[in-house]
Amino acid sequence: MKGSAALEALAQVRTAIFDKTGTLTIGGAELIEIETAPGRDANQSLQLLASLEQASHHVLADSIIRAARGRQLMLSHPHDVHEHRGAGLKGRVDNMSIAAGSRALVLTDKPLPRWAKSGEEKYRDEPVLRVFVALGGRLAGVFTFGDALRVDAHDALGKLRSAGIARMIMLTGDDGAAATRISALLDLDAVVADAIPAEKVATVEAEKALAPTMMIGDGINDAPALAAATVGVAMGARGATASSEAADVIVLTDRLQPVADAVRIARRTRSIALQSIIAGLALSGLAMIAAAMGQITPVAGALLQEGIDVAVILNALRTLGDGHLWRA
Image 1: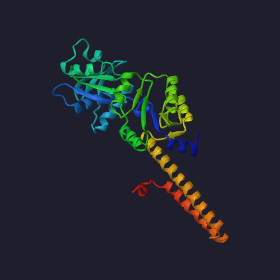
Image 2 (image 1 turned 90 degrees about the vertical axis):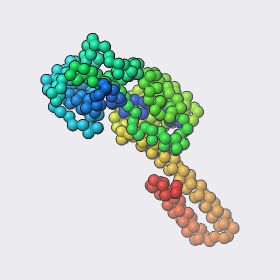
Image 3 (image 1 turned 60 degrees about the vertical axis):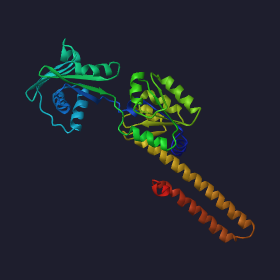
Image 4 (image 1 turned 60 degrees about the horizontal axis):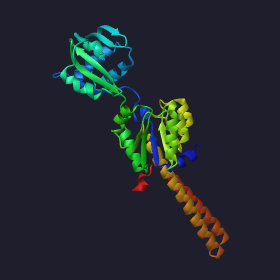
C-alpha cells in the first residue's frame, strides 16, 4: 500500500502501537542521573569525567562527552591515562587523579558510601549502565546511563490524541522493567513487553481486528509487525532497511513529531476530499434537475458545470496549506 492509499488509510487510524527502543526512546545510552558525594558539584564531576573519557575507545565515551558539551562544559586534556579493558579508566585531569568505570575498578573492596546506596538500590534491576567516579581516591559521583525518552515524545503523543487516536500501546521486546520505566513517563493505554516478533504480529493483528491500527517501529524485528498493521510507519533515519521496506510510511527525520503531523495531514486531506466529492455531486445533481426542468439552457449548463469543477478543484487546493486559517 503506497501513495494515496497509505494516506487515506492513515486518516482512518484509531489505534497506534509503538516500539520502544529507537521509536519512543533515543535508542542509545544517554545520561539519566548524576549522584554526587556531599560537597561535590555535579557539573565539575561531569567535566572531569568527560575530560578523561576523551582518551577512551568505549562506546559510552561519546555519550559522556556529548552530555558535558550539552551543558557547555570546557574539557581539559587528560594525562597518564590507563584503560582497563571492560572496566574503565584511570588517569589525571587538571592535576587531579581520577578513576572512572565499574564499581569493582573504582572502589575495589571498599564499601559503598551511604549517599550512594539509594541509587544502587533504585537501579538494581534496571537495564542501565552505572559509571563510578573517584577523585583523589574517594568516590565523588555515580553517573547512570540508559535509553532515554525522545524529547518530542510527550508532544507527539499528545497531538496524536488530539488528532483522534483513541488507543496507544507500547509493544517491545525489552524486559518488563525497562518498558515500565519508559511507559510511566507517557500517557499509554497498554504495555506489552518481552515480545518476540511473532508475538508482535499477533498483538498488531488483534488490535487491527478492533480498529484501524498504525504500527511505528525502526528495527528489523519490527518489519513483520509493520507489514501486518493497517498502516506501518518506519522511523527510517536510523532504522533498518527491512523495516523501511515493510512500511507504508517512512519518517526520514530522527524525530517522532512527523508521525503526528502525518496523521493530521492525512485526516485533513481526506476531509477535504470528501467535501469536494459531496459538494461536486450535490451541485451537479441540482444543476441537472434544473436543466431537466428547462431552467438552464445547454450552454449555461455547460458553463455552470465548468464552474462547479473549478470550485471543487480550488477547494482541493486547500490541502496545500496547513489548515490554520480554515480552522479559525
